[in-house]
Each structure stands twice: as C-alpha cells, then as structure tokens.
Length: 324
Image (cartoon, rainbow, N blue to C red; front, top):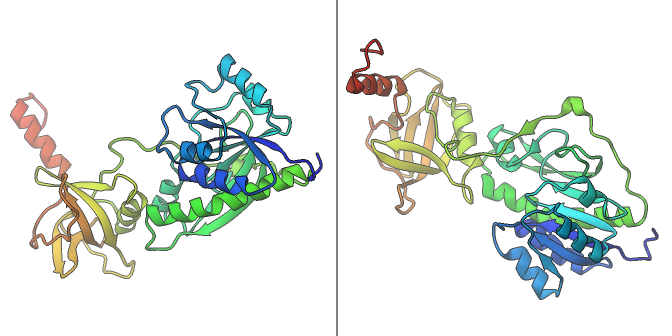
C-alpha cells in the first residue's frame, strides 16, 4: 500500500497511553476510524479525546463476539493498534484488518512479556525499560517486532516517573510504526523464545514488605508500587502503614539486628533495619490519614514476626501438638 494512501486505523486502548497516541495520530495523515474501549476503563481520557475528535467509540464486553466482529468489519480498518487494552484479541479480530494488528508493549520483548511490566522492571532493579511495537499473533506478547526503544530508569525513580516517561514516548513510536507499515517498510523481527520471561498481574497482598528481605529488594518494591500505585505496606502494631518514599545506598553497612526495628532518627525520616542493611523511610501514611514524615522512636518495631505470631495463634487455639 503506497504511503500516499492514508490508512484506516482502529485503536483498541485505555488510559493516557492510548489517549495521547490518538491525539498524535489525529495530527497525521492516517485516519482513526474507530476506538474500542475496555469494558471497564481505568479513566475517561481515551473516550473524551475520541468524542472531541468525532471518532466512533465502542465498549464491548466481548471483543471477539460475532456482533463486535461485524461492527469492526463495517469500520473496514486497514490496520489495528492495541495500547493497554485488556482483552485478548482472537484470530478473526487480529486478521480482520488486511495489514494486521499491532500492540504497544512496555517491555523489552521477548523479556518482560505479560502484565504490570513497569512495576516488575523497577522491582527487578532494571536500569532501563523497553518499549516494543509488535504484531499481535495468537500468543501473549509473542508476535514479530517492528520497533523497540529503551528508556532509562534512574536509581531514585518511582513508578510515577517511569510511567510518565513511557507514556510520553508512546505516541511517536506508534506513529513511526504506522508510517513504516504504510510504506511497506516494516521489517518483522521474530522473537527468540529462548530469551523470553513472563510476568503475571500483581494482586491484592503483593504490596506487603517483608523486613527480612534485603534493603535492595525492599527499596525497589517501594519504588515499584509508589504513586500512582497502591504503595508498599507494613504494620505498626495493628495500624496499616503505607510507605511511599524511601532511600537506600548500597554502600551502607551490612549487619545483623532485629529486622523491622527503627534504629535511627533523622529530621526527614527514620532508619529501619532490614535483612541485610537499613532503609531510610521519608514518607509514610498511617491508615487513611495524610502522608507524613515518620518520627517513630528508636526501638519501634514494624511488621510482624511470623513465627511468634504463629506460636501465639497456636496457643490461643489450643491446638494439640502444634507449637504447644
């Protein structure tokens, strides 16, 4: 298909990623003929942009249902683009556009396939994150790659900073990919499956801090689920504590002591013992309260001693033969 002939594009998506990309595509030569929203969008950004631009919007519960496929066929797209869409497109939907369907994935495929990739990359201590535009096939993030970019992850970056960086890079990457497809210049690079790693979605309970873990792992976890994420969690007695910001320097001393205990106070936070070193907590939240700088006394103990708790529970239940 000649670059002189604009493509008809259908966009599947959600959130700022897709909304900003739609605005970028609207300034180009290709035409977005319809937008397919998640059945439960994370926000209204994409719908608002589509309606402002006068683009048709659909919000099907089942994207692969016959009635949805019939609607897509009426739109007659040349190319499909998926950005943060939550349903898996079946073979018919994928192949309905003659030029195929592309997906924008925040991971350096074939590494970091799956969900919540930005969080996992920070949690794993990565110094960069990939952004991949690839063809969708009937696997999960397995299709041929068209374009890839890498973006930095700084040692002090939290989820919000990395997310903003990724979102800002999406529109131009997608626009470039569409240009290559339209010009017949998109080189398809198969993914080497031997290098693949896969990550599942994070769920309720994954936010809890285990103070027996290393300072590096705890620090990365706090960064990985900081705002706009749910925040890392611990306990102070019966109170829920959300840890929003912390500092760690790998040069700090390593030694054994009571994990979870406050071992130092500073004007802008407290120092807490971890499984190998310490962590400096700057901003926390007690329950539903306002964020604050912690000023707990030295000796304050965070978290739960699981073995001691198990012993108390066993004694209170009077279970014969279990830690009695």
